[in-house]
Amino acid sequence: MLAVGFWANTKMKSSKEFLVAGQSLGFFVMAMASFSSIQSGWGMVGATGTTSAWGLAALVGTALLAPLGFALAWFLLGGRLRLIAHRHEVYSIPDIVRVRYESKAAHLWMSIAMILGAIGYMTAQIVAAGVITSLLLGIPFAAATWVGAVVVAIYTVTGGMLAAVWTDLVQGIIMIAMSIVIFGIAMASGGGWSGIMGTLAGEDAAFLSLDGVKPVVWIIANAIMIVLGMVAQPQLIHKFLMLKSPKELKWGATVAALGYATTTLFSLGVGVATRSAIIDGRLAEPDLDSTATSFLSNFTNPIVAGLALTALLAAIMSSASSFITIGASALMRDLTSALRIAVRRDLMWNRLASLVIVGASLFIGLYLDQIIYLLGAIGWAAFGAAIFGPIILGIYWRRGTGIAATISIVSGLVLNVGFTLLTSQAGWVPPENFFSGAVVIVAGILVYIAASYATSSKADKRRFDELYPLVLAQNTTGAPDDRNGAVLADDIPQPRSSRANKFASEGVE
Image (spheres, helix red, strand yellow):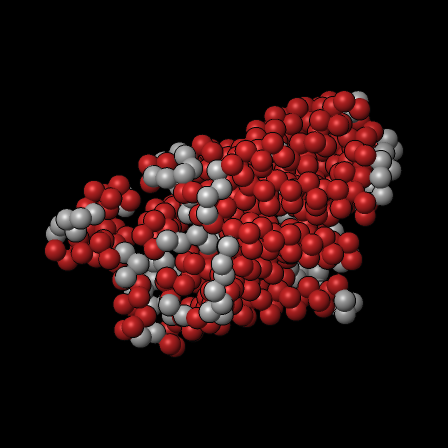
């Protein structure tokens, strides 16, 4: 990973290479980097623990609904975001808000949301890396957390997003191979799939049901958070800004979804095998975040365990590197731009901002007492609430406004930070059926829609039209602009029906 970072550093000429990999990605690298940056310490370490404790329902969202989220993201965002990125010099999520709404307040608050969300999600990766590194090196958790943070910081600060996507590719391949191997080992440890299922059913049949040991309302809320949150994850959206050609979109969703679904075999296999071993008295029950490492220590030989733990670190680092770059961009490029602060030597300052993001995440990870799954959910919900309305709805809906975007982002931040502080610092215990992530995301979407209806104007619709000027020119004159018609044909796949064409080219009123 460090070698890739130093290689990428030789390609660094400007912030374009650092932030969007020079907009040079092909579909396979982009798709693999997308799934591996989503599949993280939260998804593998955290989901393994929750599967063991809560039943198969804990994995339904990540194994079945997350791939659906990939498909929706490609369908809804791929073509449009690549078009916007290449025609408006867009390198980040706040950049999209800037060109869509021309609102200083919306640009500012989206920058803040990206910084806070990146730190929140990075914290989950830092904690997961500490758990695994501690076991690998036999050192205390705090020291191990520092080691993991320093390694990922070095190659990301050195090579930026260019290093992140290529290391994501390598790490994604490692995760897929490891997940398949460990699933087989996990099944063998408990007498095969039928043997494990029989043990679990004999102890508690609810463990194998879709609603599991958690209330149905909680499961539905978790599903909402995962599907809507997946479409609105910046580490995925950011990849669309890096594509070199719209033709690269064709098979990306399939590759990313299959890759992600395959890696959930790790959480499924280890989760149910661990619970079976606990029931049989072959293993003492570990805490949630130690489920994966406990299984590997007790049921695999040291070489296999070491390779598996290395693959888990790959999952963690693939997400961490993306969030470091996203957070650094929001801090030194977007926030300063929104505040009208001129930044010279932006490449150097982006690297320093990357260190700030790592430092903040490290501090919170060492002192905030939350399990990895909940830490990841905090960051996931923060991004979903801030992005879904202003970005996903905003690039289709002409009525969307800068005021609505600002209100939606701020309300999502307030709710997310508020729930986090209430549960971690004020001792508030939420009701059993309450899942804050889904509440925050849905609230952000509803606020955006309501505020847009209340504040819509002709100027806002004009700003929307300016995102796709050539498309509108073709729609009204019957022919594309002479200077860029060929680019238009490549960038916007033409829908089959006239109604679909109107939707794709003009947006929704």
